Length: 237
Image (tube, rainbow, N blue to C red):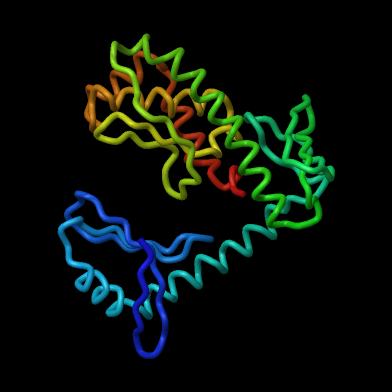
Protein backbone atom coordinates (compact mmCIF):
# COMPACT_ATOMS: atom_id res chain seq x y z
CA UNK A 1 0.00 0.00 0.00
CA UNK A 2 1.44 3.35 -1.04
CA UNK A 3 1.25 6.13 1.56
CA UNK A 4 2.33 9.79 1.60
CA UNK A 5 2.99 12.09 4.55
CA UNK A 6 4.29 15.66 4.74
CA UNK A 7 6.89 16.52 7.37
CA UNK A 8 8.42 19.99 7.66
CA UNK A 9 7.27 20.76 4.15
CA UNK A 10 8.87 17.62 2.72
CA UNK A 11 6.82 14.98 0.95
CA UNK A 12 7.65 11.46 2.12
CA UNK A 13 6.34 8.51 0.12
CA UNK A 14 6.51 5.02 1.55
CA UNK A 15 5.18 1.53 0.94
CA UNK A 16 3.27 0.04 3.85
CA UNK A 17 3.33 -3.73 4.36
CA UNK A 18 0.90 -4.96 7.03
CA UNK A 19 1.20 -8.39 8.59
CA UNK A 20 0.84 -10.28 11.86
CA UNK A 21 4.17 -8.92 13.11
CA UNK A 22 4.19 -7.18 16.51
CA UNK A 23 6.67 -4.38 15.90
CA UNK A 24 7.29 -1.73 13.24
CA UNK A 25 10.28 -2.02 10.91
CA UNK A 26 11.60 0.76 8.67
CA UNK A 27 13.73 0.06 5.59
CA UNK A 28 15.24 2.08 2.77
CA UNK A 29 15.71 -0.12 -0.28
CA UNK A 30 17.44 0.68 -3.58
CA UNK A 31 15.01 1.27 -6.39
CA UNK A 32 11.92 0.77 -4.23
CA UNK A 33 12.20 3.63 -1.74
CA UNK A 34 11.12 3.60 1.88
CA UNK A 35 9.24 0.55 3.13
CA UNK A 36 7.47 0.21 6.47
CA UNK A 37 6.39 -3.13 7.97
CA UNK A 38 3.67 -2.72 10.61
CA UNK A 39 1.15 -4.87 12.52
CA UNK A 40 -2.12 -5.32 10.66
CA UNK A 41 -4.03 -4.07 13.69
CA UNK A 42 -2.16 -0.75 13.80
CA UNK A 43 -4.12 2.30 12.67
CA UNK A 44 -2.90 3.95 9.48
CA UNK A 45 -2.74 7.36 11.15
CA UNK A 46 -0.44 5.88 13.80
CA UNK A 47 1.91 4.52 11.12
CA UNK A 48 1.83 7.89 9.31
CA UNK A 49 2.73 9.62 12.58
CA UNK A 50 5.75 7.36 13.10
CA UNK A 51 6.94 7.99 9.53
CA UNK A 52 6.43 11.73 9.96
CA UNK A 53 8.42 11.70 13.19
CA UNK A 54 11.31 9.87 11.51
CA UNK A 55 11.08 11.63 8.14
CA UNK A 56 14.53 13.23 8.27
CA UNK A 57 16.22 9.99 9.24
CA UNK A 58 14.32 7.95 6.64
CA UNK A 59 15.09 10.36 3.81
CA UNK A 60 18.76 10.34 4.78
CA UNK A 61 18.73 6.52 4.83
CA UNK A 62 17.24 6.55 1.33
CA UNK A 63 19.84 9.05 0.09
CA UNK A 64 22.66 6.84 1.39
CA UNK A 65 21.14 3.73 -0.18
CA UNK A 66 20.83 5.41 -3.58
CA UNK A 67 24.38 6.72 -3.28
CA UNK A 68 25.69 3.22 -2.57
CA UNK A 69 23.64 1.92 -5.49
CA UNK A 70 25.34 4.33 -7.88
CA UNK A 71 28.77 3.31 -6.58
CA UNK A 72 27.86 -0.36 -6.95
CA UNK A 73 26.66 0.18 -10.50
CA UNK A 74 29.96 1.84 -11.40
CA UNK A 75 31.80 -1.10 -9.82
CA UNK A 76 29.52 -3.65 -11.52
CA UNK A 77 28.96 -2.44 -15.09
CA UNK A 78 26.75 -4.43 -17.47
CA UNK A 79 28.12 -3.31 -20.83
CA UNK A 80 29.05 -5.70 -23.61
CA UNK A 81 32.22 -7.59 -22.68
CA UNK A 82 31.84 -7.20 -18.91
CA UNK A 83 32.17 -10.25 -16.63
CA UNK A 84 29.06 -11.71 -15.00
CA UNK A 85 28.51 -14.72 -12.77
CA UNK A 86 25.95 -17.27 -13.95
CA UNK A 87 25.61 -20.64 -12.22
CA UNK A 88 28.81 -19.96 -10.31
CA UNK A 89 30.93 -19.49 -13.41
CA UNK A 90 32.41 -16.16 -14.46
CA UNK A 91 31.32 -15.52 -18.04
CA UNK A 92 31.57 -12.67 -20.51
CA UNK A 93 28.38 -10.71 -21.09
CA UNK A 94 27.59 -10.38 -24.80
CA UNK A 95 24.79 -8.00 -25.76
CA UNK A 96 22.89 -8.07 -29.03
CA UNK A 97 19.90 -6.10 -30.29
CA UNK A 98 16.65 -7.97 -30.90
CA UNK A 99 12.89 -7.57 -30.68
CA UNK A 100 12.50 -9.57 -27.45
CA UNK A 101 14.60 -10.57 -24.48
CA UNK A 102 16.43 -13.87 -24.88
CA UNK A 103 19.41 -15.31 -23.09
CA UNK A 104 21.77 -18.18 -23.84
CA UNK A 105 24.73 -19.67 -21.98
CA UNK A 106 27.91 -21.08 -23.42
CA UNK A 107 30.94 -22.29 -21.47
CA UNK A 108 32.41 -18.79 -21.38
CA UNK A 109 29.66 -16.36 -22.37
CA UNK A 110 26.23 -15.18 -21.31
CA UNK A 111 24.59 -13.97 -24.54
CA UNK A 112 21.68 -11.60 -24.07
CA UNK A 113 19.43 -10.23 -26.78
CA UNK A 114 17.20 -7.26 -26.00
CA UNK A 115 15.65 -4.20 -27.72
CA UNK A 116 17.97 -1.65 -26.06
CA UNK A 117 21.43 -3.17 -25.52
CA UNK A 118 22.97 0.28 -25.00
CA UNK A 119 20.72 1.37 -22.10
CA UNK A 120 22.05 0.44 -18.64
CA UNK A 121 18.63 0.20 -16.96
CA UNK A 122 17.23 -1.86 -19.84
CA UNK A 123 20.16 -4.29 -19.73
CA UNK A 124 19.83 -4.78 -15.97
CA UNK A 125 16.07 -5.34 -16.29
CA UNK A 126 16.61 -7.85 -19.11
CA UNK A 127 19.22 -9.75 -17.09
CA UNK A 128 16.87 -9.91 -14.09
CA UNK A 129 13.96 -11.10 -16.25
CA UNK A 130 15.94 -13.71 -18.14
CA UNK A 131 17.87 -15.08 -15.16
CA UNK A 132 14.70 -15.07 -13.04
CA UNK A 133 13.10 -17.46 -15.52
CA UNK A 134 16.20 -19.63 -15.46
CA UNK A 135 16.22 -19.55 -11.66
CA UNK A 136 12.56 -20.58 -11.42
CA UNK A 137 13.09 -23.55 -13.73
CA UNK A 138 16.18 -24.70 -11.80
CA UNK A 139 14.56 -24.22 -8.40
CA UNK A 140 11.45 -26.17 -9.40
CA UNK A 141 13.69 -28.98 -10.61
CA UNK A 142 15.61 -29.07 -7.31
CA UNK A 143 12.42 -28.85 -5.24
CA UNK A 144 11.08 -31.88 -7.09
CA UNK A 145 14.34 -33.71 -6.34
CA UNK A 146 14.71 -32.86 -2.64
CA UNK A 147 11.11 -32.64 -1.38
CA UNK A 148 10.38 -36.41 -1.42
CA UNK A 149 13.79 -37.10 0.15
CA UNK A 150 13.00 -34.89 3.14
CA UNK A 151 9.46 -36.09 3.78
CA UNK A 152 5.84 -36.23 2.60
CA UNK A 153 5.10 -32.49 2.71
CA UNK A 154 5.11 -30.50 -0.51
CA UNK A 155 5.53 -26.74 -0.86
CA UNK A 156 2.68 -24.49 -1.91
CA UNK A 157 3.25 -21.59 -4.28
CA UNK A 158 6.84 -21.05 -5.46
CA UNK A 159 7.82 -17.47 -6.30
CA UNK A 160 10.99 -15.81 -7.56
CA UNK A 161 11.63 -12.37 -6.08
CA UNK A 162 14.19 -9.59 -6.13
CA UNK A 163 14.82 -9.82 -2.40
CA UNK A 164 17.33 -7.46 -0.86
CA UNK A 165 18.17 -9.20 2.40
CA UNK A 166 17.14 -12.85 2.00
CA UNK A 167 18.02 -15.77 -0.25
CA UNK A 168 14.75 -17.50 0.48
CA UNK A 169 11.75 -17.63 2.79
CA UNK A 170 8.91 -19.94 3.76
CA UNK A 171 5.47 -18.74 4.83
CA UNK A 172 3.25 -20.34 7.44
CA UNK A 173 1.15 -21.71 4.57
CA UNK A 174 4.14 -23.46 3.02
CA UNK A 175 4.63 -20.99 0.16
CA UNK A 176 8.28 -20.56 -0.80
CA UNK A 177 10.05 -17.47 -2.09
CA UNK A 178 13.52 -17.46 -3.61
CA UNK A 179 15.97 -14.75 -4.62
CA UNK A 180 16.57 -14.79 -8.38
CA UNK A 181 20.29 -14.08 -7.84
CA UNK A 182 20.71 -17.66 -6.64
CA UNK A 183 21.10 -18.60 -10.32
CA UNK A 184 24.31 -16.55 -10.33
CA UNK A 185 25.78 -18.56 -7.45
CA UNK A 186 27.29 -22.06 -7.65
CA UNK A 187 24.58 -24.76 -8.02
CA UNK A 188 25.41 -26.05 -4.54
CA UNK A 189 24.34 -22.70 -3.05
CA UNK A 190 21.00 -22.90 -4.80
CA UNK A 191 20.58 -26.47 -3.54
CA UNK A 192 21.37 -25.36 0.01
CA UNK A 193 18.68 -22.65 -0.03
CA UNK A 194 16.15 -25.06 -1.57
CA UNK A 195 16.86 -27.61 1.16
CA UNK A 196 16.78 -24.89 3.83
CA UNK A 197 13.31 -23.70 2.84
CA UNK A 198 11.93 -27.22 2.40
CA UNK A 199 13.09 -28.09 5.91
CA UNK A 200 11.05 -25.15 7.22
CA UNK A 201 7.96 -27.11 6.19
CA UNK A 202 8.80 -29.39 9.12
CA UNK A 203 10.62 -27.06 11.53
CA UNK A 204 9.48 -23.43 11.29
CA UNK A 205 12.55 -22.23 13.21
CA UNK A 206 16.34 -22.55 13.25
CA UNK A 207 16.56 -25.04 16.08
CA UNK A 208 19.11 -27.89 16.26
CA UNK A 209 16.41 -30.19 14.87
CA UNK A 210 16.05 -27.90 11.87
CA UNK A 211 19.78 -27.86 11.11
CA UNK A 212 19.90 -31.63 11.54
CA UNK A 213 17.29 -31.93 8.78
CA UNK A 214 19.38 -29.69 6.53
CA UNK A 215 22.58 -31.61 7.30
CA UNK A 216 20.88 -34.92 6.50
CA UNK A 217 20.47 -33.74 2.91
CA UNK A 218 23.65 -31.68 2.62
CA UNK A 219 26.32 -32.45 5.24
CA UNK A 220 28.55 -29.68 3.86
CA UNK A 221 25.80 -27.02 3.94
CA UNK A 222 27.83 -24.67 6.17
CA UNK A 223 30.42 -24.20 3.43
CA UNK A 224 27.77 -23.01 0.94
CA UNK A 225 26.01 -20.92 3.56
CA UNK A 226 29.32 -19.15 4.17
CA UNK A 227 29.92 -18.78 0.42
CA UNK A 228 26.66 -16.88 0.03
CA UNK A 229 27.47 -14.65 2.96
CA UNK A 230 30.97 -13.91 1.70
CA UNK A 231 30.13 -13.44 -1.98
CA UNK A 232 26.87 -11.49 -1.84
CA UNK A 233 28.59 -8.51 -3.49
CA UNK A 234 29.62 -10.69 -6.44
CA UNK A 235 25.96 -11.46 -7.10
CA UNK A 236 24.99 -7.80 -7.24
CA UNK A 237 22.99 -6.36 -10.11
